Length: 398
Image (cartoon, rainbow, N blue to C red; front, side, top):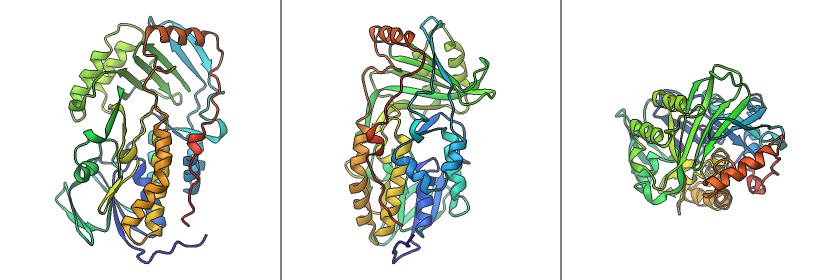
């Protein structure tokens, strides 16, 4: 492939965040000849976590990164899902071979497997600063000075915020989160717990109106991933930075003495890998300001109701890096990034459903109808590929 023309090959870039969007954009920036540093507040890339989907245009991105074969090996193969009633009795056990995930080349992998794969693809090529984060940004006409929490100072040409839905970089540059945070009416908590039920390549799902509890066994190991989600009328901004308040909020939403609920709540209270958040979207009129741009959930989180958070992060990283490579001026690159990507983001964010869903019934009536429908099935019905997942044809930047 022909090399991209870059009058300033070694522009220095700081990327904040080492989850998915961060290592992905670091990979592409390095490939285009940039000098890249990634700062991450945690001590290492985080493992474990819930399954995430890679499909449509995002599959093309990981293929171009040469990591698709490894991700294929990490594919989560779920044989069946068991739905249990409000009293814990089994409603139906359904095969999953006809589900959309895994069909047509789509991937479902554990989040930790994806982050580790992305990290290993780039760790020898870029500088990682763990146990640190950005404290201040001083955007100047010819550079941006960064002060880190550690006290160190460095100057970069560009800063990329890839630090999630509650992005500290966005807060520093654009102000408080509230104007950009669009709550979709529910919260969730994810954590690992012992696999005392002996689950293997399967899931179990319990519902009451407006609440859901799930156990997922990606393999046949000693741990499973637990998920507790619940509808709530108001956004609990006050608990986002208080993990004990998060635990109390989730526990209060699940007082039930049925199925595995008491044990899940107890494990949630003690989990050292608890991940709590609201089911929300980030919507912004602009994804950049000055020498700072946002990518992934920091700019356009679609919520896990769409199944496209990971996909948008991977595609956004590819496009932003490519536009920076093909424009000498960062402002022109940022404008081009938004022009290319925003229609795709909007289509995917519009997939979110705030009302009833089969996996999250809101009322007794919808739950009853859902359960009656499940009892008539032997396998989960196939879902045709959604055109939105592939609505963007990737530009060729190389």
